[in-house]
Amino acid sequence: MSKLKLNVITMAMVLALVAAIGFVTPALAAPIGPDQARVAKFWIGKKYYEVDGQRREIDVAPYIKDGRTMMPVRYLAYSLGIPDVDIKWNDTAKQVEIKRATEKIGMTIGVKSFSMNGYPHINDFDVPPELKSGRTMLPYRVIAQAMGALVFWVPEEQAVIVETFRDVPDVIKQTIKKVTVYKDNSYADVEGLDGSKKRINTDSPVLITDPRDGGFTLNALEWLTIWGVPDEAILFDPVRGGLMVRATTGDYPKMASGYVYLYAGEKTCWNNFYMNSVDKKGMVSGANYIKDNNMYSDNPIQFATSFIFAKTYSWKDIGNYDTSTGWLEN
Image (cartoon, rainbow, N blue to C red):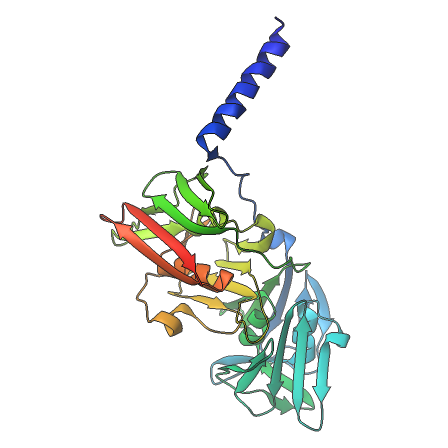
């Protein structure tokens, strides 16, 4: 028997064995990074901004009001790649609407409440939209996150950096309903919506002991992988410390997030309705943090699972967080 034929037979036997025991090794995680994203930068008090390093003019400079960065709506939209046709202004009602892919937000000058994807009153701004020098000024972080972008404040430059997908990914679909992870082990057991069960091998342990307090923490990228979130639906910047997931989205009356966000140093996760996990559950969590180009999170990344798939998330820990099982239900 030739060596080539022997190698082919051996490989076939290995693949058959893998299929028989239900052990799966997913492709290496490769979420979209800042070098592949659309990156814009604005400076407080400056009448210019940059998109991918190219300077552009702006007629009303951003400013800070009550601790919030206020930005002209049109240039805010341009920074995210939103064209004029998707920016609507009603001069009589003093209302503005912005649309990007499946997400749409509506706002009124002087009113703190805003609508999102058909919900008449989904949340409130800290600072309401206002008119200045003939321009509609909006609180930047709320709008940027509503439309699918990470937002970072650079205090030493008095600047805001925003990162977003160059092309908005398709909304994702739930395929997994239950996962079990094991502390310091690089695998997880998952159960699909169709009832199938398999063990998934991960690049590194999903569940580890939190080095800060001895509790538990989760590798956020590995966690998203075992829940079936595709790499192209994740934007991750380990340097600035932000992670964004394209989620399931949905119109009224079915509330489903279009995007979900986690930031290093914060003790929560956000969705694009400007809701966060602290608001929803009152959970006490450790701060998300970056180590070895990974983001680690405890309660926030678990609750993010609920935001992503628009389902109720529950979990049960065994021992000293030796094993953790989480599941989604309607």
